[in-house]
Image (cartoon, rainbow, N blue to C red; front, side, top):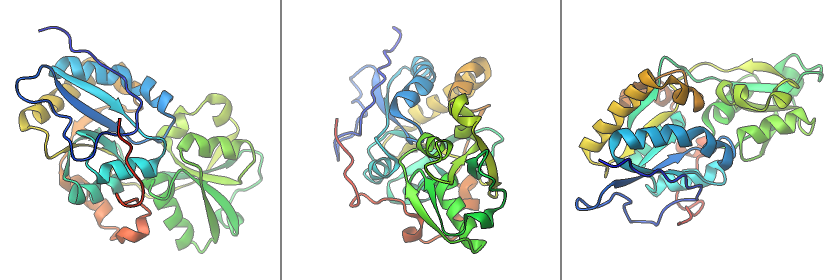
Length: 287
């Protein structure tokens, strides 16, 4: 069988209502793989491209990388069921598994997700109460670790704040490092992968409680045999090509089940309180 082609497409979605899965007489099968835009599209393409190319080779499918300009737009695409496979945050998964028919197939191995708040290293801020009344940077309202968990922690501590949504984790770190805002929310994976000259100007002020991390989830239209092929490929790549897994910011991959995210559901956060977009909030752009 010839090696399937991989096309790294940094685009904003797919046509509403049309499945990207090829018909049975077409070879290879085409699957769109959406990545939550925690970082810039170009950076995500560089990180995920080699990994998805290897998954494409091992499954015989033609996998197309997709992302969006910001997290709310990505959420609108999840709401529309625009991706065949998607890497989404824990709160995204609990919502869109019900609303859009996504089902978890894999996750980062032996990992829990914590939100963290960073401040500039020379700011003199060493306690959360020092942020009372401050404007704080977050990637988007619906970013689980970076925004939802941090906002809940600040509120629980009685720290008043004004959120400033700056589109991506990298934008948060850059804004705080430049002294534009006194603090910002992120997660350890993106903090560790930000440019060293930015990271060295920051220090972690606070970490939230830990939860099940991001889900890799398949839309219910994806055939079971392809889901099984994807799962087999994830596990084999994790074992045989750990460099590719490290490239997407993970130490390993394991299979997942829906109940893995019951800890997130146990937060019992109302849909409106998550800040996560619905399809009506923003348009998921077509190709």
